[in-house]
Picture (tube, rainbow, N blue to C red):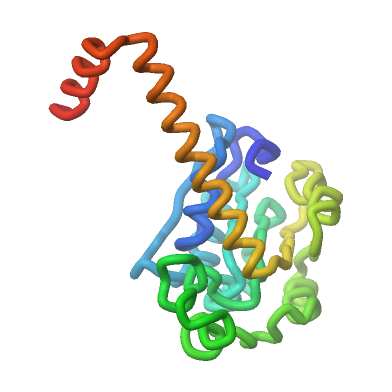
Length: 220
């Protein structure tokens, strides 16, 4: 999606996993990006992004967030001032996936226990497929959904279209194990790219030149 966001749009990234995931990808240079982490958590992302859409009525405003962050602040979508330039991408992974990533407590106690005690699994209908849909339509939003990559790509064109003047909610259902695996793959790709860049720089600069550049960076 990152390359498909129209020039001049705004993008609000909500909380930990979303920010970590999107940091792997480049966006068009004119896209305005922000995030309000609050207390390092989920508070107020929908409200903040709706406010951004009202402050920027001439461009599309996207909010990307997980299901818990969405449910925490979803009442804002009933505000009568929400315009057709507002779009939400909800990653519904049935709870707080950040707590199940390697290095977090939930990863060590297993997904079932993490859902029960930490990640708030089974709340808000889980992956019912109807909970967000009914709420979105009742609030006057266009609802889109995807459970596979193919379904996502089919709906993406409409979701980022500047020709559709109706607020949208795009619910994308994912699995915990897929998210963990995808993040590990991207993390290692990023690390490998960084290592290759260092090797190329050393070839060009040589040991003496590399030491000189390292000295400058260490002083800055």
